Length: 130
Image 1 (cartoon, rainbow, N blue to C red):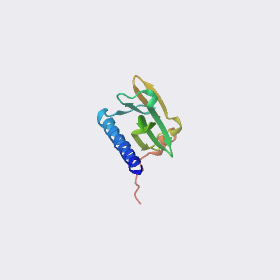
Image 2: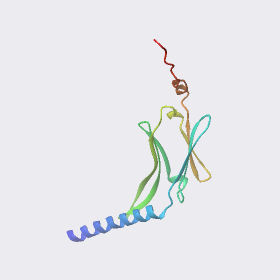
Image 3: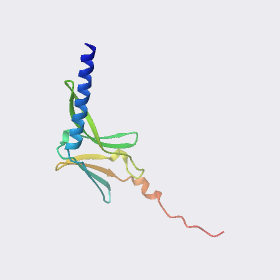
Image 4: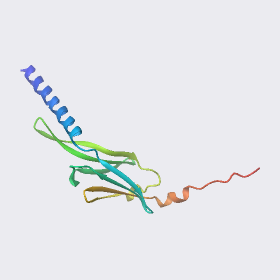
């Protein structure tokens, strides 16, 4: 009986690995672009075959994450496997509280507004003679 359970678990593991291999090898790579405008940066993310309901944007400990969830069935249970597209610390010149995300024509658009207070933090210091 123990051997049968072990074989089933091993088979489930192999099936999971096979499915992940198929998913990772069978989908197109996400497309991501950044643009800069007067108000801030804009990140556009498009993942072929992935809809709005699967896309996720989170801020955790001043780190911005963009990912999508892939449904995966393992042993009769539906699991959501996160696939990370972008994960970086939010720079000081971006206003973390003002970050917004919208879905526009099959693309996730993340708006990253500039932090107005950081605009005056950069200046060149002239070196004087003694």
